[in-house]
Length: 351
Image 1 (cartoon, rainbow, N blue to C red):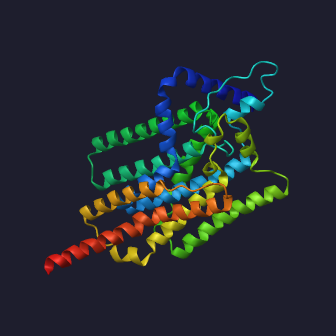
Image 2: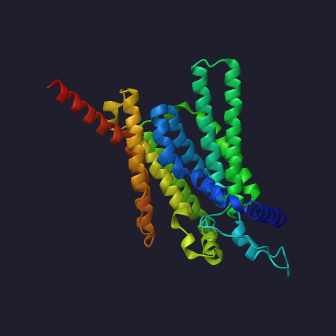
Image 3: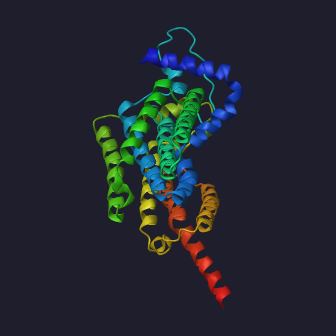
């Protein structure tokens, strides 16, 4: 593996040297590729454009990120920014010098890349949905083929930029982002074929949320009992990150797990809320657009709510609650409030 890692470091140095002027683009690509974008930006739009796609986005994101967590623990992959300091591969020679950036110092294992896995899965769902819409609109065959080629080419370009950004940032080796892309597409393809996710009951949402959470925690405890420390990467991040403020608790495996479980639970609550069932038949385009705009505004406001990581238990609980509430806003709270406002305005006009 050391030889493979050394090739990855060489590529990272080449990117940092040759494409240093694109640092801003790579930083943006990594930020947008985070699943936070799916939960806080993409979901509200797709939920009102095409509800089944919005639901599928959340399931693919949650299952994919949960699998990413388990695979990270199993594979225990290194990250470039600490590997160059600890490897014996270079012997007595000087180890390569890798630049670090504010988003370099992630604290979990490196393989597979969660960003690459997430962006591949999410884009697979969105491109598939757009092609499905084009078919339903009976788009002419030639135009459809051009549209199909263009969308898949755009997806390849976006995924490539994200993969390059993760290597450029010294957060991942090339083989880790490739593994992430392949795994993300496989997960998206499998989950997209499961029709029951569109009609899952609240009990099923609850049971699956609990199963995924307890499986991950149980797996962690089992490996800890047999002497495997799954938090070994946190020490490496703290040791080799050049600035302590670049190390964030929300990049730890358990923070990711709690956020995803909160998102899935929040989706279930939203879809099965009595408030949602009262307004879900409203298909007015202006109403939907209003819901999208208000939801995006409120979610950006919610996103600005941060909390201290001094107490880990409190931090994880609040992360779960924030993620669940973020899904309740577009699925239930905003449409219910807007529906009541519109109904009140109509009543006033009639009077």
